[in-house]
Length: 568
Image (cartoon, rainbow, N blue to C red):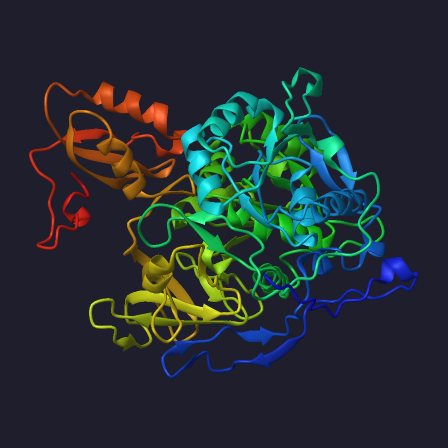
């Protein structure tokens, strides 16, 4: 693919000049929010066509000395300047490997994660992120679908990686990272195709980046189920990532810019392989000069210790973590006293839980939003300057996006306070699914609007409410579970004649998968669950139960009528 350098950012920290880093420039204000049945944001902003690293390394002279990443397990810390140096050393190595087009990251949250992201994007290499809890077959499937050349994996996952390599043989190299600071590199069973991360880095940094078309070239490829079907590679450009960060940051309070010894601090527990953890939390913190305290997984005692030791100023969370902070007797108001705001996404939080949290932290601004992998993260957020608090809503559309409501049966474009499918358009939206023209065609309307699969409405003030979901996707603790993937796995089990999977509500996880199975022979629920435990990762297990039925309800065309199974 031909790459074209599109950049307009100078490097003041390289030339010794001091510059003032400011918020993005507002280009247009929309006093009337709904025009021709299309919802507009409060304003649009100017987003330059710059690379991802141009953006996050902007103003390094004001933050390079400050801590960027701290391991919540060991305390090991990299400053923003050290992280940039490490990323440039990785970039130099990758630029010297002409055959490498795509790398995979199979890591928990760790100090090295953003360095690998930045180094890869600086080198013009595409990144696909994987859930470390995946089974070898799930990992191999994504590696093959994304055409991965090199895999960066945690030392602790060595056995899983070895099993994966037997299923996907096209990896040219595996780079092992000591992600949890176990200092056990010597215990690695290395072969000619594997190397420790420290040895993979060049001894010197890259002096320049690859030639990149920031709009057309694919930068990251997280996998998402979209509105239906199995997970697919979502193609997001460097411009998509820049748009996401700057449209979130423009309100001036999502992230405070670092200066001197002042910086924001957050506990980075949302997985960095997820679009929320990568495009919203990680990217915003790198741009602002924040300190991210990484945790490889949520552990209540460790999380509390990080609150006590690092005094975070903001937190990005999903509803189960909000529930823990609001309900646990181990968490006091003092633990939350350093916070100015919290942001909750990935699944609805609910007014009751928000009110319960406010009892412990009445002065903390609680912000909810909505988005998708396909929108590069958030598409809505709370803008205090342009709206009153609207509990139960997902608040206001982000800059440079447009939204309309469409009747999914008739394709009629609806107006204010009318309920239908949310469709969005804008420069933060994915260009489509990798190597899957059919899924891309089904996801976009003929006039270029992306169908979200979510049902809701907006009012005349531009406040958005989501009431239902067309898409079959199940959300477990904010993680996507595609019913089709579970059904395909179950059909491989002897004794399963037919099957359908739906989500059932759960107070802690949000939803849990439940399978309805037409069986033959003596198949039991224990047989089914044992099979699933061998094939799929923990959040895809049938913790909502297994129900044996005589038949699966289907339409005349053979499509499963999942709505007829909900509640059974």
